[in-house]
Image (cartoon, rainbow, N blue to C red; front, side):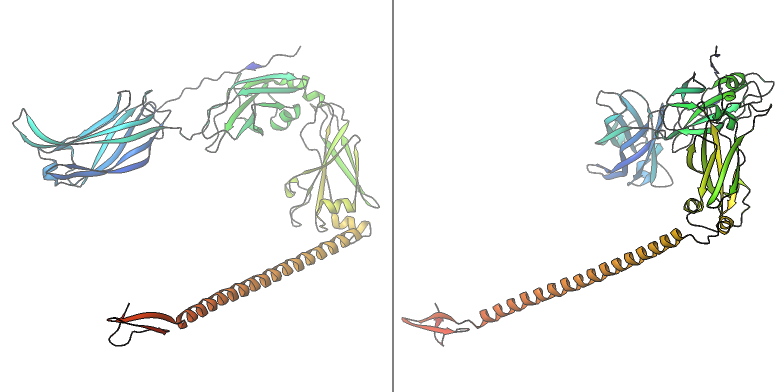
Length: 496
């Protein structure tokens, strides 16, 4: 019977430096200009008073800072016996004082016009929402030491306090659980709350440390996922960790735009279980051999079963892939000289044949390059996830061997591509010329229309100017009508 996975619980002690609940700090999003003015005295002070602030939801106390500028001379503001006091207090609609500070006569800045107002705001259920800042300015006019007379200016400023969720790395995922599903291991976990939101999760596997029970190395990331469940195959373990000690551990961490969380508590699995229920059932890596044929290359995959091999399963499928040399100057016998592998096809047998034409399609028509072909041997359980020995060939050498320098289909494809490019260029030129001709015609038509309208207006104005009108002129009981372009009454007559 398979052994159940055990949950490894890790206890971490964290030393917190600074006040409890400290966060990134509140943010002032908007302010309004306020000037305090006392009757018969004039303007006392002015300042930009906050009207919208963001308060971190994970904080217990924050300080709101803003400046006011004294308008009266400092000798009046800071007079020890009289002077000016300003009280700032934020009240909720329910009657809770959320924060306050008073600038006393001795609190004014003696070396400059700006004085800082600082009040602490404590997290409580009444904090968020639309509140009121009550600002009371008291200008003292006289005092006998016990009683004082003063003039007062009181202002009410609406202020809204909104919730501010701090951007930070996510908390680690929790409640990681795992179980065997056939020869694979299936895991689920609880996603953490995060702002910004989690974009992915990284799955890590680590070996245990020899001779130190319950101690593991730093995990190596084996895959990235976007949901809260994942599957690990025997090959995932085989290609990621050495499996030399008594157990391996699986952990997960969350990633957002700020960074990644710490690793979660892990699930460990004995190596003997992995070998018995998974790794021993998959086939070992395949080694590839290849030979030129009259039309291309014949590839063959073989697996070697040795006494030291952990994977001893019999393969019945082969997943073939290829990679193209990044540069003709790089050594073609190294995997690192090639680009990212791309799968070609899967076969139920251990052979694959590619014609020169098919290889040229894979290389994008390049002759002066090499192509590396590999295959993963697998069965119904899975594959090892490890490459064996691949086989690389020079495409130019293959072209010479099959006595074809540039295959006819490549020539035709090149000719068709060139013809298509010329046709596209001609179409673009025609479209450009047609557009320019249309624009010129539209411009000429518009200019002609404007000229015709202008000429018509000028002709109408000229006709109106030459039109004769008749007026009636009177002199005593005598009347006379005068008709002309600009009729004028004779001397002694006036216009009726």
